[in-house]
Length: 214
Image 1: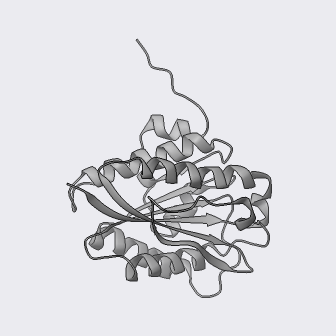
Image 2: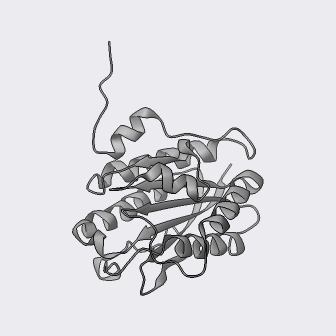
């Protein structure tokens, strides 16, 4: 049976991401290609990028079969990190613009701490995401680089088993892990125990491959 899902990628576009610009775009496009090749999934993709200048939907509920890959000209890092406002904006779109029979996945990727939000507070976002995960069965992932990912993820209501450090330069590995976790989530019935990032996946997100003892 074909399963329907609306995936939202929330990607930091602040100044500190400039050195990782090509890799960040590579993660999004690599993930898009993997989801597109998934035969059991009917997916739509939204991509939201954010900094202090704007929060932009550069892909809006695009069917993955016809969704264009993100170009470097669409991703120009500058400014600060209004993470809370970006997550609140993305969650509202994911909530209101998804079909009733679509499951929801949100993947947040940032290399810095919240420092510029004006509309949302930590308390509002934590309450919102906690409710969406608990009551509506959303999968929300937090991938952080260069900061205490677990503390910030916990402050916005994302559990430790959905949180990881990642190396932006490990673009292929990050795309693979996002797809693998999403596949496990889609394979489980709604309301089933939550999927979790494995030790091997956490290692791969950092660009390392775990050795297997024999």
